Structure formats: C-alpha cells, structure tokens
Length: 439
Ligand code: IMP
Image 1 (cartoon, rainbow, N blue to C red):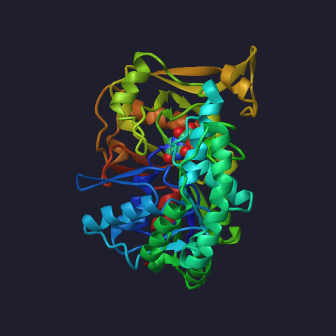
Image 2: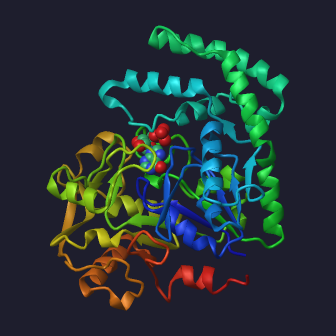
Image 3: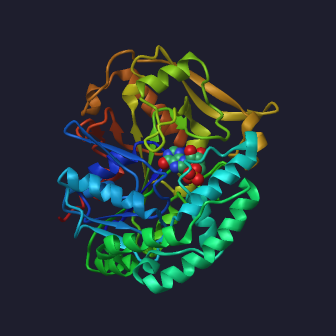
C-alpha cells in the first residue's frame, strides 16, 4: 500500500502540478480533494505547457484514473472548458475522469456575491481569485448548496434554483443596488451542464475505497498551500477549504488509516498571491528579479505574485501541521543569478524571538524576519538531474533549508520539465514510492 498526499507547504503555487505529474507514474489513481478552479497547476511535457485548474494533472498520462472528490467545489462551465482543452490536445478524459456526486457546485450568484463582499472590504480585501469559491463553500456549510447529483434531476434542480435565486437576488441587490440574476437562464444553463457531465458523475468515495481495498495506489493532490488553509492558515487571508493534508480524507471519503504519508512541496524561496501578511516579502529590485526569473505570475488570474526569501518558520509550521515525511524543493534554478541569498530562520516580535507561528494577523504583519545570509552559487543549475552535479554552495543552501525545517528533501526541481528533477537516492520518496512499487 502506498497512498500519498501531496500538499503545498507555503502559500500555494509551489509547483505541485509538475511533481504530481512526475509521481503519477507510480500510482493508479490521482484524487483532488478541495478547492476549485481557483487553483492553477502548470505542467510542461516535451515543451508543451498545460494549465489545469480542476482536473488532476494525472490526466495528462492518458491512462490514470482521476478523481475530483467531494471536497472540491465545481464550476461546471470551467470544468467543461478544461475537458474540451484536453480533448483538443488528444488527451483521453472520458473513462479516466470521475467526479463526486456529492461535490458542491459554483453558481453565477456566488461570483456576484464574492464581488460584493470583496468590494465591501475596501483596503482589507482578501484578493480572492473571484471565481465564487468562498461563497460556494459558505452555502455548503449553511446547508443550502447545490451538489453535482442535483444536476441529474432537472425537475428538482429547477425547484432549488428558483427558490435560492430569489434569495440571492435580494442579498446581492442589498449591497449592489440591483441584481440581474435570472433563474430561468441559470436553470437552462445548469441543466445542460448536467447532460454533458452525466457520464463523469459517480460516488467517488465508494469507488476510491473499493479500489484501495483491491490494492490500487492513490495520490491525493492538494490545491493551494497549507498557509491558505481555512483553519490553520493566515486567517482571514486564506482560501475557504482545508488545503492541508487532513483535508484529503474528508475531501475524498478515504479514512486516515489508509494514508501512508505526506509530501510537501516548497519553493526555494517564497511567493504569495492576494492580500495578507508575508514576513519575508521583498518589495524592491530583488523581489522583482525573483518574479522575473521565476515567471511568478498567477496561473489562474495572471496576477503578479508577491516574492520573498525562503521563510523557515512558515514552512516549519507546515511540516508540523502535515507531519511531512519529505519536502520537494522546486525552482532552485531561479536563485542561480543571486550573489547573496537570505534565509529566514525565525521571527522576532518586539525584540523577542517567537517560538510559534503567530495566529494574530497583526503580529504576523509586524514580525521581523531573522535572516541568515549566504553567498549564492552564481552559476546555472537549470536542468541538473544529478545531485553530485550541483554547485557546492547550492548543496549548502539545500542542507540549510533541510536543517531549518528538520525534514529531508526527496526531490529537487531544477526546471519546468519532468526531466529537470533530482531524486535523492536515500530519500523517503525513493524508498516508499519507487522501491515499493509492485506495478
Ligand atoms: P479564493 O480561494 O479565490 O477564495 O482566494 C483566497 C486567497 O487564496 C487569495 O489570496 C488567493 O490569491 C489565494 N489563492 C487561491 N487559490 C490559489 C492558488 O491556487 N495559488 C495561490 N493562491 C491562491
């Protein structure tokens, strides 16, 4: 048995898509468990770029079962666009993709609601992806959400949509002055989505458990990052779901006792999109250089990502929350041209070193990073596949990150392609995933 969870160990965009794609080779099934089309996974295969928002990147293998689990919120229009994009690239989707009948839907009023609530926040905007994710989860918790299974019963669907749209119109009009929501239009759009998606909708919890009991190996693919987790992240500047490892069980209906371990993905530096505290953020030319070298622009929204040095306390917090067996360090090559590199080893607040990652946003906004400065390696690591070929200063840097986070590095990514990866021989990933593979 090897059922493994992959999560982002920072604020998202750590490069999970590539690592999931790489590891998929060793698994039978890839399952998404939370978030929606706010996520954006970029995968390069033989020079061709794919950006996936909802469908697990395992689909690109062409012969893996891919699950969109119960914990995901689905905009059917975005999903169908993704199916179309993949089929146009000759990638097999039908027969490989299965969507939970219990997953909740995003409706047009969720986007309108989100816009209204972001506007009302003024300078305290969360900076969401504006995809209706938060309001869809709000409705799920308030027990007035629509689920995939509702799409399959047009009569019942009509009743629910007409009832709830009236309520939403009043709500949105109270903030915006008016609302253009039309229940007839929403109904006819969604009933058509139901027809198009019918073949994908199943009880994925049942399917996954049956497969696992019969020996299939599952890779659980997290979206966003641990520090955006609704419960443990930098609240309220978070997403509306459990992006940490714990979310994988709830979001798929697979019990914790089936899980072998968790791998965290972290960039060799740090980025964040949207609002919220970011202690190691670099606002000047160094931040700009990181953004340009790392092509740090959001895969979903195109927004420039905020960039900063590696944040030891934030990543260590992730290690604890997820009990990470291994970290994968991505984008090492982005640091190739820096003469000096800083690593944040701790936070100080009002002159005292903090021992914990603070819950209070005001504190996190005013902590001072404690940096360790090291000379850069100033030569190319791009595309290196063998650890011994790394410059010694890059090895020292990696060792320092491993010491700070008290976690081993299994993979080091040195470029966007599948091949641009170093697998550490003695690592957890090699021992548990590759060596135990009976496929
Ligand atoms: P929401 O998920 O659209 O509600 O946005 C909430 C916060 O999470 C915002 O700061 C977004 O920028 C951030 N966020 C959502 N999805 C991602 C992602 O895939 N990568 C990085 N940040 C994300």
